[in-house]
Image 1 (cartoon, rainbow, N blue to C red):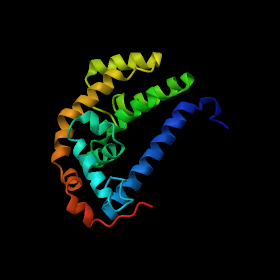
Image 2: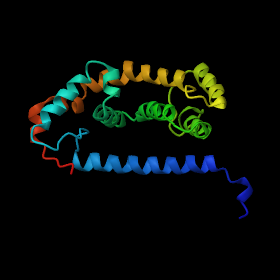
Image 3: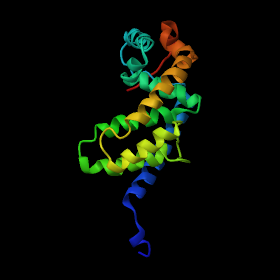
Image 4: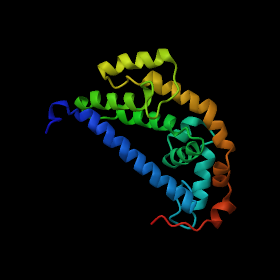
Length: 191
């Protein structure tokens, strides 16, 4: 009761979201490390290894193609975790989610959460963007329009495309997805 006047619901929700994200990330890491799961969810039928391989081959066509694939995002996220740079993709995904927020009255709170989580200097999962873009975005967040993160999101996207994406395409994870014989050997069940 003594802290009732200083309670900030947005800060509370941001903290709870961080805790949940951290717990989920830990769980995913344990599952990935303990069971060597592939990030492709297409192992439900016998012939799906071909579908997974075909889809994985499409990711090499363009970075945009990778980002529009649910399994591609999952595989890329798994790879970025090995490089300790998943915050870039998480920020990009948070911006995509933000743009799709149906209720305009939710935008200011979400914008603050995203800024505090990824863009504020010293943020828990700070992404690497230049000072001018950070300040421009800070001003845009005050207005909380749907495109307030566009400049920062694009800068992060370009960084991933030029830096992480080429390494992903050369990674053992991606190469394993392309190799049908490796996929056939996996005995996974996602039911």
